[in-house]
Image (cartoon, rainbow, N blue to C red):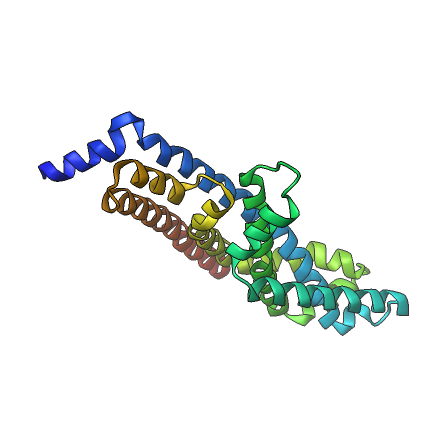
Length: 242
């Protein structure tokens, strides 16, 4: 017990080293939050493009030019998803930091948000697409029969229902992003993992800071996992009520 307290004092109390973890945790949560928002927005756009292309009823009354544009947009989205999902996120971050933003003095946190947001959007797009495709085709036909345009039908009828279906999966994506941000240190971001690594370099004690960082990640994922489970239960209750 005495050795544990000694290690904690050395790694956390001495020279206020706990601040490395506090600042790192703050950056981790900022990156995760805004990357999730960016991923949801881009992912929804990509999913709508791909679903519109797949939904021939939505294009049957459209002119030839619009059909060609949708086809081109769908091809671009498919290529984007293939590239993003087929390459490691750390490589994507390094390309953004060392190649694209190298002369723009952009902050590492901003680059991390963009990088993780772009990476997340490829996975969120497939989540949204599965949710959109799960909605009964009769919902689209009902909206069109009421005089709504394809866009209005998607906006007011299809997307809200799909969002409810995929909401737990989106929350899980947030949890996944929390852990994925541990590689943000490659682009000069002092995230939670980097904070622990800085402490290790000061104290030459690898066990204590790494176990503390692992414990914080575990605590965060457990807390948000409980939230997701409660959300799923709540959604199931609402479905039974309706």
